[in-house]
Length: 346
Image 1 (cartoon, rainbow, N blue to C red):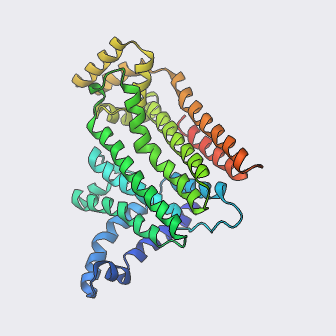
Image 2 (cartoon, rainbow, N blue to C red):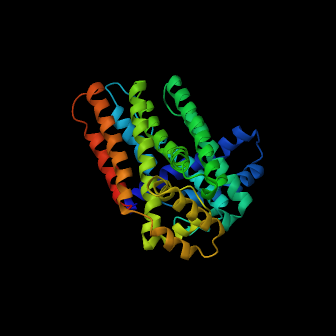
């Protein structure tokens, strides 16, 4: 993210955080009037949260909310509340804090992970707080009650799906899944864990524009497919790029369900796949295993996620051609943004 974009982002987040943790808001929420008690309650949360929210990310989800709104907007649509795009980023930030604890990661976005600097209990509480705060902030947006109710349902169901995906990521080891089941298992994990938040982003934007249900669905499907495609390219890139060897070793060390395994299960014979699974399960030297595993990776596998993204864009274009005829500059901006993200995994 460039400096102007970061400066634009941080005041919104900091203003939202400061308002939520203001004495007035805390007094209402905690049913407490003692200033000293409120100051203590504010301090123990504000420090860790200000730390994690100040770290710049790609802001993909916030941009998708804005794209969903701009594409679905019609005459008479309400204005997009500036806080709405940040709500999905809050959910994402919370998931990163919790993921880092679960993965025992030591770094996030160029700085020590929150549980490293503040301890696991404080980080875990802060991450969970970030799951609930967006629901409170959402209820206060200047949108019609039916729209807010629909958004609340979207956020709640998305968080359940994300946690199902995380359960698969944490609880299923790649060598425990039969080669025949691997592609479906990897797809389900990716769709739930990664695709869900991108799907939510475009759906929230469309809901804010009071779009018809079929348009909300069409935009959401693009978000889901984009999430799957980008995660696929990320998984493949970690194996094929020497610069990302550490990430590949991390995934292999945790025996995660990743896309190289799914493609291998589809292209290689079952004996080869099972042999590699057994080798991973008993492997002491992951560096050696990675080199052996990489020999089975076909660069042509990258065509599949690109084809997936192409198909999803085409479906949305077809939908808009029927329901919102005419050129859509906003859609083309979204497509260019997705293409840039796609190329970043080269």
